[in-house]
Amino acid sequence: MSEALRQAVIDTALAMNASGINQGTSGNVSVRLAVPDAFLITPTATPYSQLTPTAIVEMHGVTPQGGRPSSEWRFHYDIYQARPDVAAIVHTHSRQATALACLRQSIPAFHYMVACAGGRDIRCCDYHTFGTQALSDAVLRALHERRACLMANHGVVATGASLAAALALAIEVENLAAMYLAACAIGTPVLLGDDEMDCVLDKFRHYRA
Ligand SMILES: [Zn+2]
Image (cartoon, rainbow, N blue to C red; front, side, top):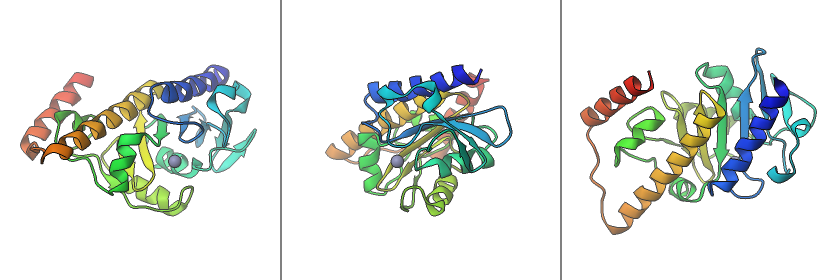
C-alpha cells in the first residue's frame, strides 16, 4: 500500500511540473497515511524526475524516516494536525498566483470559481521565512474554512481529500490568478456579492455530495 502511495506522490509531483504550475525542485507534495500523525512527503532538493518510491520521506510526527524531507514539511505537518478533512497537500510556486502573492493580495470574488477553494475569496497569508513555524501558523490562519491560500512573496498551498483533488485545486488557483491579473491589467473587475458567492458555495456543496 505504502509503495503505491509513494508512487502516487511522485506521479503528482511530476504532473505538477508537467502542468506548468511549478518549476524544478521548488514546491512539494504530501499525502496523509492511515497511521496517526504520519504522512509521506517529497524529499528536499531532488529533481522529481529522479525520484524513486524509496526516496519519498515518511514522517511520523515531526520525525523523518528514510531521508531528508522538504524543508517546508512543517506546514504540511501542522495542516494534517489541524485539518482532519485534508488528506493531501500540493505546494507550488506557480507563476501567476505567486505574482499576485508578491503584491500580497488575496483573490477576491471576481469569478464564481473562486468558491472552489471553499469560501468567498482565496486569502494571501503574511510573509515569513520558508520552513518556519511562523509561516506555518500564517498558512493555517489563511486556510481557515478554505482549501487553498496564497503565501506572500512565496507561492500557493492547495489541499484536498486526495492527491488528485489537491493538484486539481492548485491548477485551478493558478488559472484564477491568471484571469484576475489579466482582468486587472485592463480595468477593475466587477466582484460578485456575498449572496451570490454563498449561492455558488451551496451549489458546490450539493454538487460534491
Ligand atoms: Zn515553497
